[in-house]
Length: 117
Image (cartoon, rainbow, N blue to C red; front, side):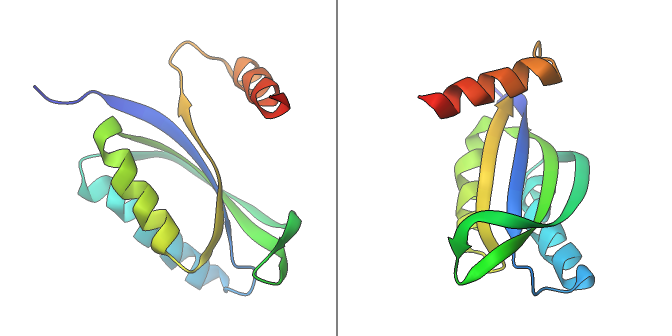
């Protein structure tokens, strides 16, 4: 029986010293894991360089990238290992399973409530 694909949202902060082409190559490499394992990239958005909440590896800013992925739940662990092993990623800020029935406003409310816990 094949595993059902689920939709995930990934927000990650990349090193701010990487050029645009280096950042694009890094993201392509990371997201290549998803497509190589039968998933798909649904949406990708560069949010630009923004100030981090706290310094990471002596950086005060990060180049933020948001992606929406469709992949099997069983591939998540391997994808997380790929994210954590890559030195160009300062931190995967959030990795959220998108619920089919959830609107953008519902998701924002849910995430805010989860942060308060």
